[in-house]
Length: 72
Image (tube, rainbow, N blue to C red; front, side):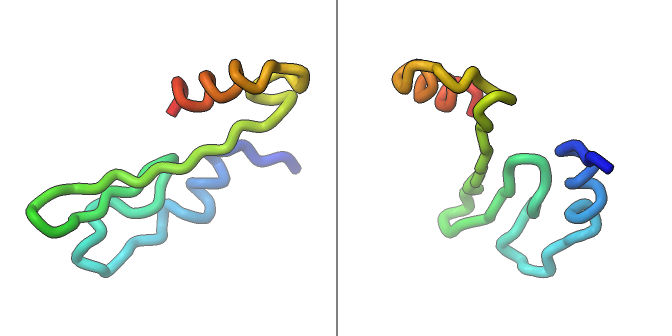
């Protein structure tokens, strides 16, 4: 049975909560928020682009780099 991105997140990660004081918002869709010194918040994000899903396999590498930066 196929499972999409958001249903996977809901199934495995929505119930995961951090007890650390420096984690403002933990794992989720694409970003976590960490409280760092000097009363600042650090946003950490990761994302994956898959050939044939998010871009055509024969895309020019420069165009793919542009897209990767633009969507994130």
